[in-house]
Length: 209
Image (tube, rainbow, N blue to C red; front, side):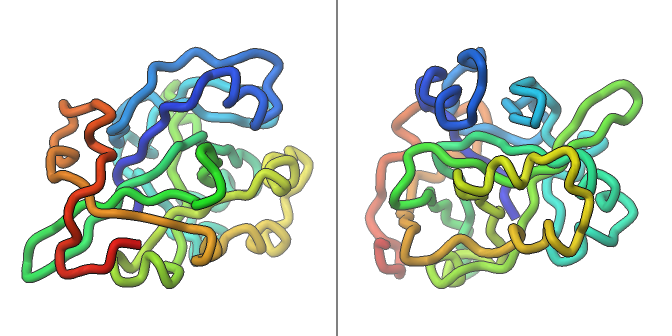
């Protein structure tokens, strides 16, 4: 799953990477949580949308996103990208959950795969998840789908509705291109939102990647 992420890039950099006509307005955040309004990029540009279908379903499993009634139409017609600087996942050790901060090693800004929906007048988004790569596997059994820049246009193409062709994007990010480290449990509290949340902590029975 993907329960929290961070976005703290310069808006001009976001505009450049995602091919936007102008820099989007957003506040840098180091602890973005489901239920809030997040920055989303579609084929029509950038906007703010609620994270969580029906304000509840924050993630959609990639293995069933093309068939599950809740997601299949959105997957075929309303795909989006969610700009991110990194994401959090929790590793369970001896019954205790320890947060990690993870990101592509070669990108300070990247796009998470999402699908969008309009329900009762509210535009919402769910992030697509997939099986873990070798970096994620010791930490969690799921990871968000990361779309590479060269695939942005194909992923957002409003004329592409073929689920089989789209499924080629639903895959783990290459492990050799990822890095991660343990961080403070202060990230568990949504009210905590500052750069210090990203600082590495001493490894807890795990190798610092």
